[in-house]
Image 1 (tube, rainbow, N blue to C red):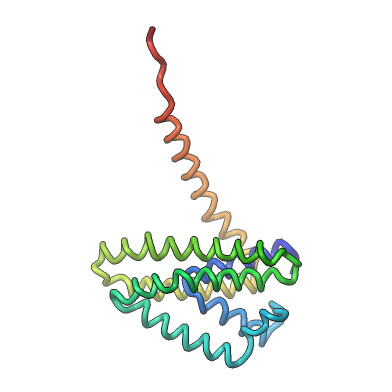
Image 2: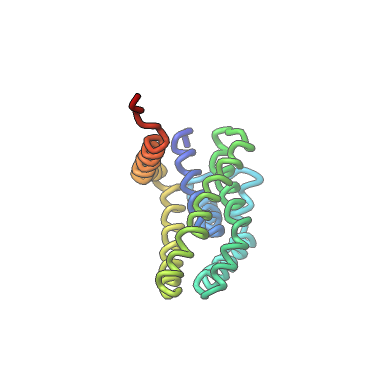
Length: 196
């Protein structure tokens, strides 16, 4: 894997960990065990151990049920505030190990990416959905998040360049929106001409 595809793969895996901490680790473990799409070196290859894969399946099932239960889903998001960024850091570091990226930098980027996705989900999206639908939309949204997490995890390993395209597709409008807000804010703060 070259540097660019390894980075796209790492970004996709760490972002998906922000939605569900265990799915990208499980996908990495299964793909490492059964295909040549990713070769995890020690210590990261532990995720392809049968006991670890089994544990991840149990944790995924618990997460799915906790994330679908009213009120419990918000408690789960609070607990996951520590777990999802950690999983994202692990996924990023494991994905970039082959390109000799500084492990501290890899962990920091993984923490930031997964933490940003998790924070957006837990602080912005989920409370808004709960408030506007009385919690009725939480189960389908939770299932959609898990499907997205699994899809992005697989795509990050199978077609990492697609992750780069998705980053551009979603990132460009966000960057434009932030720049527009900054310009608007700067325009408000700029004093108008004075008549003397």
